[in-house]
Image (cartoon, rainbow, N blue to C red):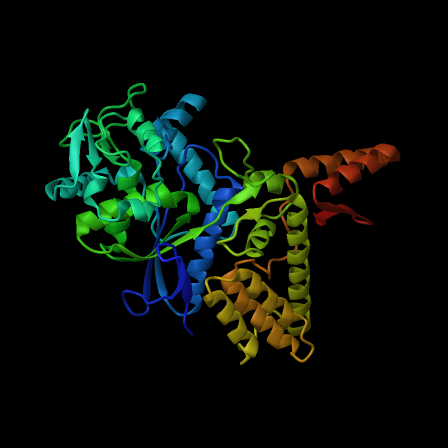
Length: 464
């Protein structure tokens, strides 16, 4: 069955045709590890995970690369502001690499909690500076760069169609304002490939280069790492829509000028997660929520995954706790049903049945990763009384290979330390016959997403 993907440059669904039969290379823009990932960031990684799972579901062998940005990403994507790692280091009074390694580890924890398949290759920018220098040299040798004020710039006037690709504004005043920010630029949208001049305090991460001691621009990093591990022609590149006008446009310009041909065949982008009145969730706005915020409130990380799958990745999605509650209830129902099926059939899964539901499910996920419709097919199959329990069990297992909801997880969950402490306090109150306090503590526990079960063997709690 054919797979259709919305290719950002054309804005249309296109039939996916791999560069090499049976194999797919995917590059995903990873996190800049100067702070925790927020749940808006995680939406982009759930999307790329669904893409990978769908391709594997269709029999492709996927090579997935996702970088870790630990140098060079400035607070303004257009070469302005402070390096985010330097900023994080000052904030926490640590070195940039200490900041990077800590938040990288936290990011990977979040990925695992969200049941996101870890990419086979996760290159760090700081460990690939040599490749970045070589790519800049190649661009320089081909006449696409110029040096000014100590930095090496990419000359966007030499890449035909740059303005149309980036959908750049044609307002002269906006162009002038950008030139004034960096008067060394020949054209408003030129960008830095290599920094030796930096208007903030001395950059603490510096490397030798033909242009002097300095550090790479953010955009050259992804081009260098992606091409190292996936080659000069790549099947799919993913990211968030905020990458389109600057970062991904610059990646395309510098890569296609360096290699002399089309670099990526399919560009896929997920839309924003918004809060409040349609405001994008972002660290710079300080309006972001961490995954830990949700789990501390008693939610399972996969409740949030279900919430994300309920909307198409290309649609803007508003986060509310009411919607998350709905996702939690839905996932709980699925897991309860999965438990019932296992009890009635046993935990030895039967052979996968021939079913129209498999075709329906495949058709939906192959239609530009339409997870809302795929979830609907799953629910329809579970409620179909004409299907045997064994068939439902096998269908659920097959569907979950794509959805990644871990529907057969047992109900046993690790109880957070703070919940265990509330349980102990409640037990003490009950033994002292202080039932008012015990009742208040019960309500506190329940408000955090746990159900209190009193029995002859003592008090137990479980996720509600």
